[in-house]
Image (cartoon, rainbow, N blue to C red; front, side):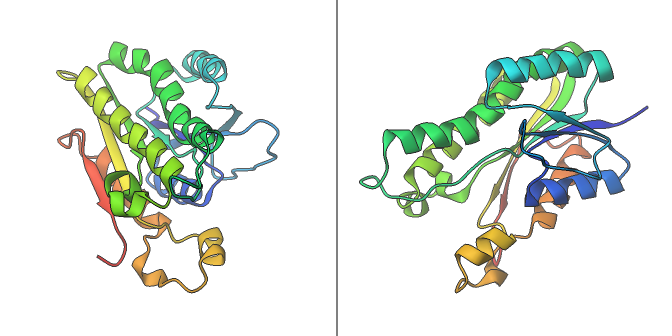
Length: 225
């Protein structure tokens, strides 16, 4: 039987590492990309154009997925974005954009796939948080980003609470700065050895999915620690 996983945001640097890892371990990869983006994901077995920040788009995808595949072992939620700025530098538009990209991209998938998980009495949601959401000293200079990622952390907790007594699991992965080419370009003077590589996050995600005794874990992936 196929071990299907859905990866949203699969065309990004982290998405590529996650897809490569799970593909190597024998999973069938169903990835989503933003409609009209022109992104290509060669290692994915199937690719859907879905705006997961939109509830109706996510709902339509869930219906189509269920008809096509019937079940999914894990949903890995990687769509997101970043914005800097302290309180005085942050506008409500900044916050709304970060909430849309980071929170609703996860919430809409959870809302529309949780019924499938409940029916099967199993499944894995894998969320991506951020250290600034947990540490105010880091979050004060990235307020909109930290607030939106804090909502993701809370969502993971709510899923865990609602799924008590089932085999549905809700894990959250909290990286520091991820070592990607765009981050290196934007922070050329940083100490890259203190960052976490996408492949390390991918390994942690695979470990979580393949260890059913782990329930509702927070994986803190801080490079250089």
